[in-house]
Amino acid sequence: MRRLLPSLVCLLLAATACGGNDGGGGGSGAADPIKVGLIVSLTGNYTPLGSEDKKAVELAIEQVNAQGGLLGRKVELVSRDDKTAPDQGIVAYNQIKGEIDALIGPVFSNSALAIEPLAQRDKMPYLSLAPAQEQVEPIKSYVFVTPALSSMYAERYLQYIQAEGIKTVAVAWDSKSAYSVSGHKSMVALASKYGVKISVDEPYETTTSDFSPLFQHVRDSDAQALVFWGSGAPGVTAAKQYVASGLKTPLFLTASQASKLWLEPMGAAAEGMTVQSAIGVVGDHLPDGKQKQIIDQMAKPYQQKHGYPPPQFAQDGYSASLLLFEAIRKANGTDKTKIQQALETMDLITPNGRFRYSVTDHSGLSPEYISVNTVKNGQFVPTDWAKEQLTKTVTAAG
Image 1 (spheres, rainbow, N blue to C red):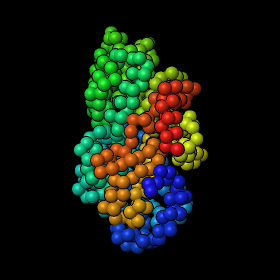
Image 2 (spheres, rainbow, N blue to C red; image 1 turned 45 degrees about the horizontal axis):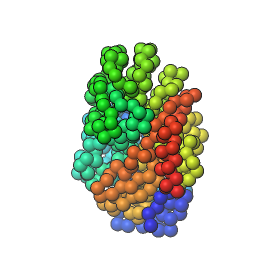
Image 3 (cartoon, rainbow, N blue to C red; image 1 turned 120 degrees about the vertical axis):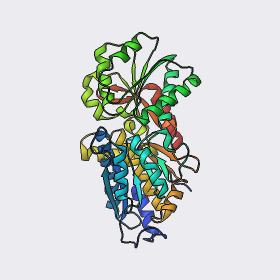
């Protein structure tokens, strides 16, 4: 019977009952630590994202080790910085590939795509923290994605846009970001399905510092909303300039802004803006049940340790850790092929939602685990539509 709730205590008791046998895995004995590789941006443009991922993975490892380790073995983290650069991601991977049992990261889609073929070649179980669609289309047997894909964020927004009676939108997208390009491509492809027309379709670059031409184009159009695809600095820059421009067309931001790293520099100017997020970001607004329980398992100690709720990126890192821990438990060791096979049969609730990986689906999530929020009093609060949708989703899970 598939396990739906990864309570670490239960997981570890079950693992201990299985003994310390490596099951034919890569370790040399029960006393050897299980080594988890982590490559994220700790310097460069995506530092704010990668640092939150790292904090969350460290928390998950602390929790599992506090309960006696996994399969009777201590879990150790081997981390490297990709410096928000694909070539540095490759360097980091080559530095650690010989000493790790599995890999988590990066958060920067361009780096993730650069590492992906290397992990596949080496048969390294790899849980990516980036949402670019190209990672899993086509399927690579050892590559799995933890965040909801860009296409899912695009479809969730279109569902919300349709529910709000919006017929025409403007879309801005970062032509240098694989995440943004993928999201834009999916929104264009899916728009007609939801009766939506894109009247302004405008690319920009990550280094863009002046978005006034975009806002003028939107002002001159019949767009009823502006969907902005971007990560890191552009999300703050564009949102601040949007307020200053006086544009009345509502601004819709994607989940890359679902963090205090966007809220704090925005301050009061963020009030009323619409921002997507993973379900875990709005856990306080969910009904009691398995989904809320697993979110609290992460959120409460994270808040105590760092002084603020876990942002979007932390949700991804913690979810990846739980998925990997469960796969190792199911594989009864660190044999990479057995871990890969365990991931392909995974059915697990995490802070990001319920993952159901399969041989033909290495993303595992579906759009219903994405929330559409409004900023109220400096917090992300689900819209009435999102709250209704999320309640249905988590109630169905038990």
